[in-house]
Amino acid sequence: MSTFTEETRLRAREIIARYPADRSRSALLPLLHLVQSEEGYVSPAGVEFCAEVLGLNKAQVGAVATFYTMYKRKPTGEYLVSVCTNTMCDVLGGQKVYDALAEHLGVGHEETTADGKITLEHAECLAACDYGPVMTVNYDFFDNVEPQGALDVVEELRAGGRPMPTRGARLCTLKEMAVQLAGFADERDGAVADGGPGEPSLRGLRLAEQHGVSVPGFDPKTPIRSKAEADRAAAEAKAKAEAAKPAPAPEPAKAAEQALPEAATGSTAPDVKAPDAKSPQVRTAETRQPDGATAVPDAPGTKIPVDGPPPVPRDAQAAEAAGTAANPPAGDGKPAGDAAGAQERNLKEAEAGTGADGADPADANGSGVRK
Image (cartoon, rainbow, N blue to C red; front, side):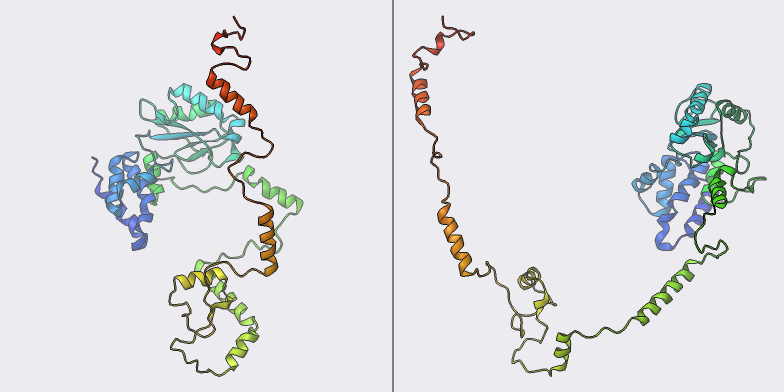
C-alpha cells in the first residue's frame, strides 16, 4: 500500500476546498490526476486515497477511473506517445506512423518499453483533424507527422531530450502533466508558451472573409456577460413580458358564479366546486380513492360516477339482439360440410389391423412394394 506524500495530501485538501461543501465529490476528477502525478498511474492505493478523502467507497471511485482513458490503471512510461488512427488521420497515414513506432520500439498498444521511457497507444481521435496525421506526447501535439519524424521524436526522448511540440510549450513528463491537469501551475522555465491557431484551423474564417459570409448583426467585440448578469437580464425581460400581457377576462361561468351570493345548502359538507370539468376517468379514480382535494359525496352539484356500462339507446339494444340471434355461438360439433365417414372408416381399419385393400400393413417392405 502506497503512502502518499504530505505535499499530495495538502494539494488534495486544496482541490476539495475549491468546491462547495455539499459538492465535494466533484473534486474526484482532479484528485485522480493528482494521485497519478505521484505514482504515474491510478493504483489501487490511489483509488483508496480518493475514496477516503471524499467519503466515497472504492467502487464509486473505480467506476470513474476506469471510464476515462486519461487515467491509467497500470504503470505508464515517462512519456505517453499517442498516435491518432481514426478515419481522417488514418487516411493521411496515421496507421503507418503507429506501425513504424510499434516495430521500432518493440511494443504494442498500451505497452511500455523496457527502459520505462515510452508507452505507446493508438488514439481514436486527438481533435486535430486539420493537422493530420497527428501524434501527441503527454498530450502535446506533433502535427503532420510522418513515420521517420515520429521515430526521431521517440529516439530523442529516450536519449533524455525534450523535443519541442509543433504547438505548445516544452514537453514535460506524464507526472508533470498530471499535476497541471489536477489544477496546479507548472513552474518550469518555458512551461508556458504563447501561440495562435495555425493556418489550417483558420481556413474556414479565411473563406468566410473571402466570400463575405457573416452572421447578421454580430459584433465580435460584444462583451461576454457573467452568469449573474445574464440571469438578471433574463429576469427583467420576463417581468416586462408579464407586465405587458393584458389581464385575462373572467370566464362567463366563473363571472356568474362570483356574482351569485353564497346560498345555504343545508349540507354539513363544505361547499366545493363539483369536479364536472374533469374527465370521467379522473372523477372515478378520485371517488374510489378520495383525497383532500376531492369533493365529498354530498357536496352540492357533485356527481358520483358509478361502475357499469352507460345506458344504451333502445335502437342500439334491438340491433345488438338481432345480431346475436343471427350469429349463434359456435358449438363443439364439427363444421358443416365436413363428413365424418372417411375418418370413421380409417379408424375401423386401424383397429382391425388391415389396410384399405385388406392387406396386412406388416407385409409391406421398406420400398412400399408387397412381398
